Length: 203
Image (cartoon, rainbow, N blue to C red):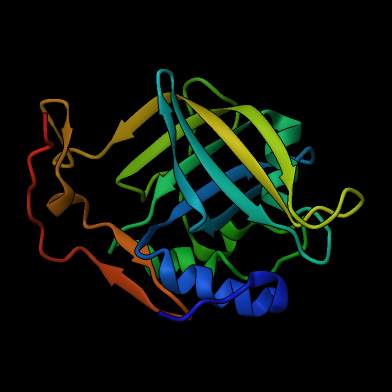
């Protein structure tokens, strides 16, 4: 067994251990709206479920040299954002949305994605996604780094609308084979849905 003290490593070295160990990670393509009305889109794999009562999800958005990214800033100011599940049909365009653009340029326009109006929030979603969730900001937490310069912003969203493409949703369940989700691995690697098996939870 190899034992490593993270305090004796660089941030980059610890980052590589985390993204190589915590796999596969689902990918959220998040849309947010700036005060100027620019529709931003960006993918994040630091993404998970928080609760089901009410339904909440979390996205951890790493800062760039202490500077808050557009998605975090927009979500905090607007109090809302939309989460889309990245799948085999949109993973390439989601990756294109990761390009570093100035705040006044829209990744949605750059990638040719189609905005679609939301029902419960002001932030539009993306039509091409098989699953999208309209979220109201529940909480934003600055974490890591130092008190004066946090390393990331965790945004927690309360899902106020679910939208599913026909075929993905059936009798209250999500059909993963129809969703064809894509997950993030280490480096530039991604993974598709592999073999599945069932285990009964012990009583």
